[in-house]
Length: 196
Image 1 (cartoon, rainbow, N blue to C red):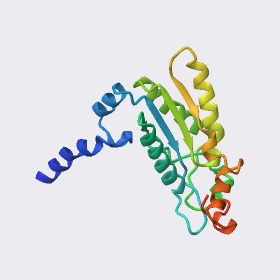
Image 2 (image 1 turned 120 degrees about the vertical axis):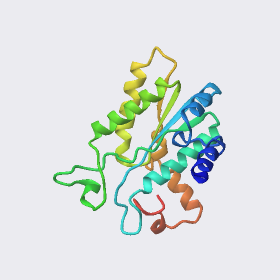
Image 3 (image 1 turned 180 degrees about the vertical axis):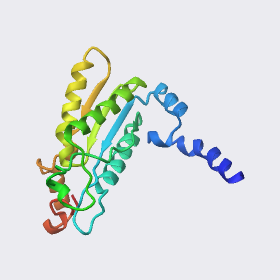
């Protein structure tokens, strides 16, 4: 009996420094919001094939790490649990990443609905800035749509939803150029499951 009690008693001390909602208790979240942590980051990843050398949850690991770093640097943010299921293609017949074993998909409208209600939940608890951070290509349009929809609906409130499209925008070349400057080869950089 002493071990379970020890684990329970030690969690709040460890959680005191966490930026992840799922590592906090409800009272700890309430106190954090009252203390000014009014930004919530909603990370979205994906479970998809990334070639034979890369785990299916790559996007979930990357976006969770990035969201945690962003929250710590802001000092006023907490991170919602990563949403691991995102649009990855059609199921029947399989398209996109769904052609590969292990990939899990949601239709874009279902993904958008989940993101929307996570945002609504966070607003209900007192978060004022809700950040949508997607680490997979098919996440982007639904995230943008949800941000626009909720910002329009909440225009008369002090709550805003921020879609960070630049986070995943490889088209502008900034991240790729930085990798090249670090001495990475085009082969190592890759297109989908290399460094990027």
